Length: 267
Image (spheres, rainbow, N blue to C red):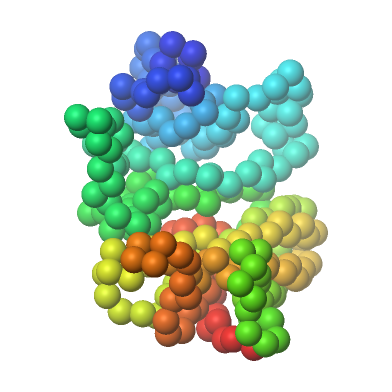
């Protein structure tokens, strides 16, 4: 299943999130005939998947290159693991999106969602998406054993690349196959108030790292936490400022599957 250059381009906005033509009907009919159907979706951005509950697996291949056939065969036959994670949130229905119309009115584009852009906006939505930011499955399972924050000694510098410290995470492959996991950590401020008041979304990605392990093996990954993750843009001073109060890092497999909580302490 795929979008085409007629409906998806960097040069114009999409009018809807549906697959073009009769592709949805095709999937529904094939899945009705064979409940073990795996659907491969070639798109560059989210689309509606109205048949999602009728198929056991969906593989998002984006827009692949000339080796797409070989790579796809390796993944479907189990020779390689689908190790990617979603950089976007996918809705069940377009009308569920917190922000659906990006067009300006009288030359003005309003951002009424404030700092709740993308997946934080979905967190405050009354409807859950089909797939959360960071979601992705492989051919094994993982246990998140522990996470420890190692702060940088001394006060952070004014350098934009300055680090708050490193989050050290231990994960274990509890499946029966070698696998690759994308360990994600999200920073959550302890300050009170609405996100718009504090100028910061309630929980946003601070970093990630890739872990590879054989069955039963435990591995450790380090995720550097940038200072910028604990800052907000002050519209009065037109500068970045540190959020007051404490923070915690929430670590897991996706924005909706966070398994470990770790307090962030300054060195």
